[in-house]
Image 1 (cartoon, rainbow, N blue to C red):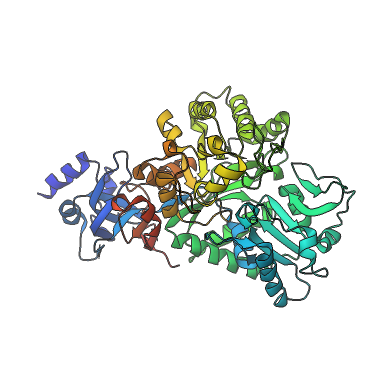
Image 2 (cartoon, rainbow, N blue to C red):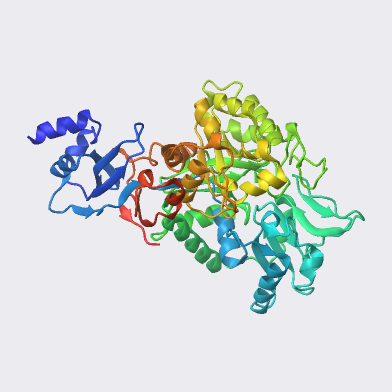
Amino acid sequence: MKRMIRIALLSAGLIAAHPAAFAAQAADTIFYGGPILTVNAKNEVAQALAVQNGKIVAVGPKDAVTKEWRANSTKVIDLKGQTLMPGFVEPHIHIVMTAMTEVLWLNLSNFTPQYDTIDTLSQKLKARLKTLPKGQWLGAFGVDPSRTQPFMAELTADVLDKVSTEVPIAVMNQSGHILYVNHKALEVAGITDKTPNPGDGGIYMKDAQGRLTGVVVEPSAILSILKHAPAPTDAELAAAMQKTAKMIASKGVTTSAEITLGLMLGLDNEVKLFNTLVHSDNFPLRVRAYLYGPLLADGMHGLKPNDGDDKLRYVGVKFVSDGSTQGITAALNDPYIYPKGTQFRGNLDYADDQIYKMTKPVFDQGWQIATHANGDRTIEQTLNTYSKLLANSPDPKARRLRIEHFTINTPEQVKRAVKLGVIPGFTIGHVDYWGEAFHDKIVGPERADRIDPSGSFKKEGGRFAYHSDSPVSNVGPLNYISEGAGRLWQKAPRKVLGPDERVTVDDAIRAVTINAAYEMFSDDKVGSLEVGKQADLVVLSANPKKTPVDEIRNIQVKETWIDGKKQAW
């Protein structure tokens, strides 16, 4: 009888076919008692799942799995109606930046419909100033003029001087592409009205009289100021990283990118930090790391593509080619509609030949490339660069080149991306938190309706993934499923942004599991519940496939498991 069951399971692909699988026919853990969403090619729902030595050894009918794999030593977990599915995969998070800005700095992020004003923001900064240790800068994150009343009100140096003229103040925009500083911070950094812009797209903004406004744009300019601030101690940083990792895991994520390794603290420091932390016993995430491209003048000479292990692997190099759409700095083909009558259409961070020369060495070394491109002018530049890089590749799609955000786009760009095998990662929170602003105030209805074009990529046969870009928006894959399938913007009266770009719940689930894993060359290990894959799992209070679309975001994450071990968060 056992032989018959084994043959039936093998023919269905439900247990490992390797002879070693039968050497000790006892699972460590079996889950049953609730829907098990496999997210396999057929989107099948199973009744039971067995884990042995950290890997999935059986997925299928309860009776067949338990009869074949249950022993006295097997831990049997009754889901009691809860849903089991693959651990979520977050392909675009700035882990170090999130730890620094949301844990060590004052977090001003506000994703509620009750927007801040310059006065409420100033009050929060003044309250923080009272508790600030002597000698420290007042650092804060999360100011967003596009979600401030009145619209596009900014924290200029003059405004921040009213908080303090003695303590350097640095407040990062929610997008991460703009920094607001007081005159004291400019003084400490040695930046004057005559200081030239630092290149790589960085700008020290000035008024009509040529005076610094305290608004600083793009990483090269931002870091030229922040490098003068006192650095956190190793202990402070490690604690902040642990807290951030647990927050990410609590949202159901089991594999996360670090999308700009080296940006905040330097490449050597961050490699050392991740090597130590990720391999500690209580770090609840797998990490796929992307080196920050501008740090690699002529390629990377220490790490090689795919170095690392299943817990921490170095897979790609990240470049930033324009700014923020909601920050009105992304490079567009046609002008923004704010302010009325403007001809401004944003700036490319690099000329065409510059970005090609930067990407070519790392591409030739075999690294995957991920390029931040929010605007359609930047997307076009990136696709042109990728076409040149892939010209002599025998299998271009195998390189899995990434475009991060792909926010403002054209139908032709979607088709080109699919043809090249490019995988876009959508910050799908654009639709939710900024949808009304994009539609009515920033780019207008036609372009806004195409933001994060999931439906178009699905129609053309391409893959896409969803992410938070944390700290830009909050981590929460269940949110992304609601946002991708519903596309309702947050501000009342709520409306659907681009109905044609909605996708099914199944498609949205794939965007936070198997597609996101594919985007990071990890789909052979995680992203679906199939025999032979790592037992990375999430337990949910309800089945997203059976939940109204806008309520999926409210489903509770109950547990996360990595390699068949329940994680503490």
